[in-house]
Length: 308
Ligand code: AMP
Image (cartoon, rainbow, N blue to C red; front, side, top):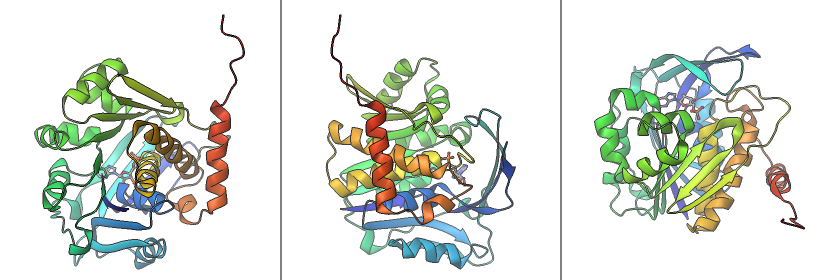
């Protein structure tokens, strides 16, 4: 099955308690595309970069089988730039700089070869652009998932409300869920958010795992306890890429299969945080991913011999 991913392809500068980077490659779309490319063969990206974006990274995505027909390269313009600083707990961060640059007037182009895609992942971008992508697909995909962040809630809440009505799954973190719903309890937040449109909601809780809500069902997956976490940037996008890549490759959108998708996404995210930027996601092997998924299964597997 085919997956279309829309999202920022960008430069990031990151500061964590372990170090600091100059401008490195980042962007929600980049992380999603790299992560999902390990699961789904037909992966297509819709994005925009400036003339400053290195061909080397475009080649890396292409070598991972990502179709780049929908990537616009704007002459004389600069790529999106984001800078963030992690707090000592590594679970929270402050945005230092957001320079929209080429994203400011992004008009997404959907190539003919992307039409009829089965799965759509709307990565973190302006909700107005996310909505345009849905509208520009001639047929509605089988499953539309979306990510967003507090930045868009602050400046584009009206557009966000419209886009939420058109999607199936929202994938956000706990802080974003609280801001979007105005509720501190994640159970209440999940209820309110699903009344805004999406039938499914995934709330990511960083090193504390992820929750999936649908109807009266809920599922929780832990994050893998890791010895070293160097840089959590992109972990959420990598999670979303693994989740959607898994669903697209198995072509099964049942709640049971979404649980497996969450484990696949969590496994991919656990690789992402091991190095700065996209480095760890660029050259994974099938057996590394399988072993990591197996570790997750072991982590939560137990036999209940006696209840009371
Ligand atoms: P995550 O850590 O999963 O939340 O994603 C971090 C990535 O999101 C970084 O690589 C940034 O380039 C990208 N990003 C940060 N802010 C925005 C924004 N306002 N719009 C689109 N992408 C963003």
